[in-house]
Image (cartoon, rainbow, N blue to C red; front, side, top):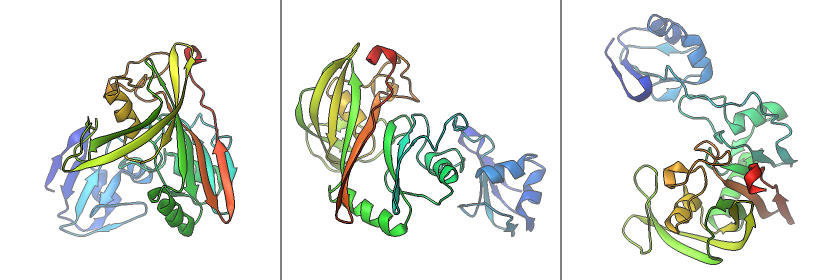
Length: 285
């Protein structure tokens, strides 16, 4: 069968045969059953999660070496901050993705929390793999849609805590970030074509051991925003090597010094306020 290899050994195949997917791929992938169960096999660009029939001309993609995340040692039930009829608040550990990756359906915060609570949960917003802290997971499609709207209209307030080796000035910070390309995101002082306006406010700054701890009110929620803005301000986060930070005090590229500390929003005529302190390294205590 015609095939090609991509990055990380990803195999692209144009099937010349008809038959069950696992039988067609078994010769070249002896562990195909486990790869399918893990979520690393696609048929016509859709992830395969059950026995599937393949026809000539179908496009198959196999991820033979899925990226792994250490979820087994985490007590996911203990990470749950609050359970509501419509949503769950989770304190996500650093180093774990929020949702399924292309090659790994199981090792993520949504799937693990769903299993721990025996309920289906949906993504409402994201925080980076290397960032810890509060995350809202929806129990209903209705809440998912309405909470996404709240975020877009800035009716849900998110506060982060970040450690830096140099202090960042209090007050609002407005910049413009390139919307295209792969990370690291490029930040500018001026607007330009294809740039997002990014806004945050540093509401507090105090010393924490060898670092300064900033409280950050996030006013716009763009990918890598805090990380990119703080680096642009000359204060990259410890562990965030992508944006110029250094590995120190237990912070590294899988666990950077950024924590989603609090969430405030109104739901069904109630003003809700959730917070959870980070477990910083000893030299930040």
